[in-house]
Amino acid sequence: MVEEGLEAKVERFRAGLREIERAVRARTRSEALCCGVTVAQCHAITEIGEAGELTLKELAARLGLDASTLSRTVEGLVREGLAARTPALRDRRAVQIALTGKGRTALDRIQSTWGDICAEMLRGLPPEKSEALVASVALAARTLAGCCPGECGTGGPGGRAQER
Image 1: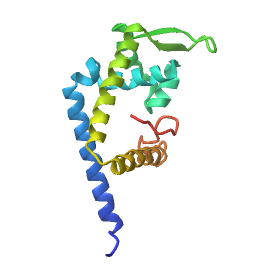
Image 2: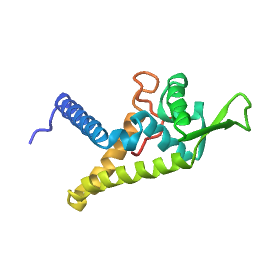
Image 3: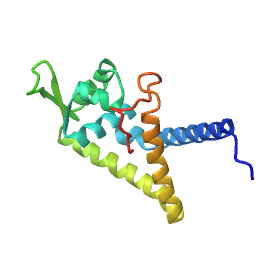
Image 4: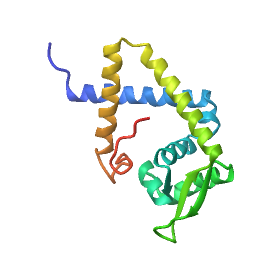
């Protein structure tokens, strides 16, 4: 059997990524926009929860976003009582962002919901296929995070792969 050409592989890969994106978008809509918050807020809550607390600049780097764009999302989290801002000890001009009790509850719901979604998907596969899928997704995330930093927005958060 002749190996498939690169162009055909690229097109199949892109088509697969688009299908995943559509499925995730449809699932987030059916899950009340990521457990009652917007998708952007969902990502911010997850990153803040993982770190404990972050400055806006650190959060922007982790999410691969501009700080001015992200500030609106953070403002919404603060307004809804999901996050709090406190002066940073290291730099008085910066503020630390941390989840409140309500924000930690939202994080728990998000983690539980997405854990259930992923478990449901993996249970539908034979064990060797589910292991290969997990490894492949991690490899794709790491590869995409380093593909073109600063050029196409896929440089990722600080060059690290996101596992969500």
